[in-house]
Image 1 (cartoon, rainbow, N blue to C red):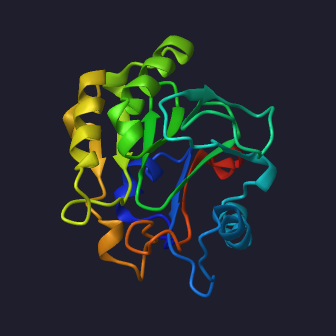
Image 2 (image 1 turned 180 degrees about the vertical axis):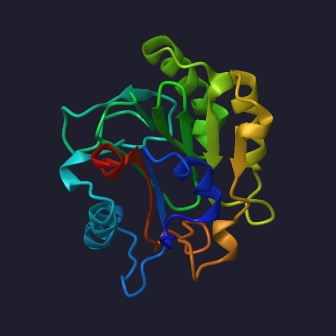
Length: 227
């Protein structure tokens, strides 16, 4: 399997309609304290992963990521510029867009409802987690798309964890998902600490801001529609 489709995403990629990826450190790309500059340098490699999945870059939908708890419904009509003021994105099952979230210690959360095929991708760092962004996302999906949290699968990406960080955001995220109605057996934690493996991951804290960004992706697999 693609090296950016790790085992912890198997539960999502087992559904032929899903394209779930987590793009980790890209060898040979110099890091910098300038977030926009480093993302620009990483973009060709990130777009290559999209292309492998048959997804055009124009279908990428991103969030501004302001460490809050606002989320937005996105779809095929839109652009790749970040949706302002939000840290989470969700879409209906028929949408061909691909959701994207950048992280460099914070957690990305993939949420999938196999019944409606609705998807969400959430940026959940310390502040967003404290504001229950996972729960807010699921409630928005319920109100707008008719999603039942009890049907959902949630996956938590590699992120910074104790002892490298004083806050255990993963434990908080799991509790928020359960409180929102996700069944405990449907919550998958990657179990990986970004701060413990700089060969594989970027870590804002360990690299003191001179770092890159991982990219979580979640969209509809166009190949499933063609088969």
